[in-house]
Length: 379
Image: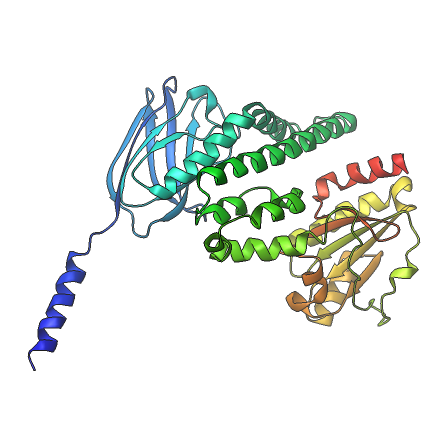
């Protein structure tokens, strides 16, 4: 009768003695007089932070909580180069950070005992070494577009977008090559699917799906692996040149939508919801596009609502004065249209030719006019 008590006592002692995860940081960034080092959650909440003075910073031991992925960033108070934060994996231990003041857009050198962080550093450093100039140009162009959006002439804006697309395509190719090299060193990496999920696989799903199929069984069956595998298996059916899925639903007057009723050179499909303010605001830009003779006469816009209630949909149509083709099956997020077009966020836009072949899948609205004009010039 005493054994249960002894066992219970042992469990309590073990639980009380369980080591808690703590982290501490020290960093060196020669040439950076004043800046900030931050660690944030993936949801963008700051966890740790420290000012950088004369190229040095330190954060003494802090409670970590649960080990996992976080975002690390180093910024210069004197200038903003527009780079994105870096993904890191934190677990119990010390992390030493090294970077260069004039290359803060590059993944920093991170020294720790974490095997997962070792793999992250290996891939991102490899990718940086292969794409340093390309990455820098993307940062510069994005900053130029953001800072001077109201100052650039239409031709200058178009030229920048063209250059940006060229560099982004080059970056995808470089990342694919770097990832293949990473797999040679870590063929059984269980986080390889996680790393792959962070890359721009949507820009070239055929190449990245082939890479995904080469991952270890453990990586493919991981949570990240299952998610990205499912996405890519759908996306390879939605690449440029493929026949677009048939749209299902009815128009506001209750008639079944007939794709054969569309007889224009191009088609833009707009997925939206009445309750999504961003997608409704974007309809103002659609109106501006339709007002242009070269577009309004040659391009058919079809807005596909993912609403589930008829009155929400029809009220929004009237309030926003949407006069172009409108379609909905009123099945909400369970709509076959959402599944068939792999819609994971709204608004989402697809650009098709007059035969319903995909020209550009999931195209940003800001580049829609550019892509339309480029296609119409060639055809």
